[in-house]
Length: 155
Image 1 (cartoon, rainbow, N blue to C red):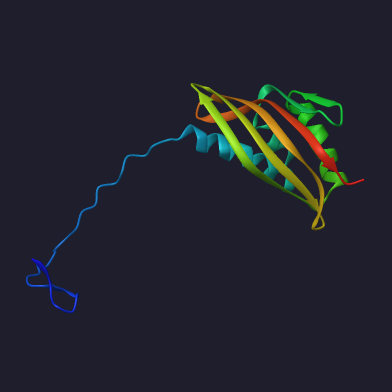
Image 2: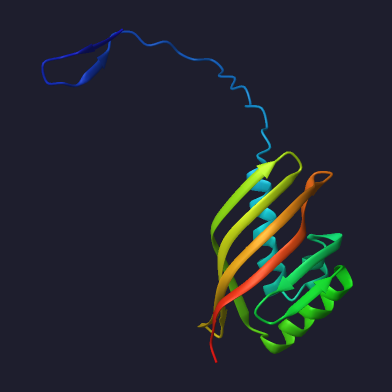
């Protein structure tokens, strides 16, 4: 029993010793939006870690990465690897951030529209948006296409 005395403090008139508490684990729920977000964030983690092979593995075998402002389209994982090796050479200390991620999921397909920023040696050097189309392959989400649009670049 729990009663309130005149000074508004709670007092317990009876207490029971609890021998063992068993807490049931909640069921594991896979949220496709979280899995898609993980793929999106892994892209920049692999880019900034100079791991273009792992970055390319985030794409389907015939995935396309289009860099609109640069007028460059990479088709397939080997072209994606080659392009991002060059990016790593040009910007060896780059750091990228992704934000305002807006994801839509329908069955085994997903879309993303998000903003990004790129820094080199602590200075903002570019920003833009991603327009993505992803497909679920087994338990992983892969980019079918990623469109990278620069809205600003430091000149």
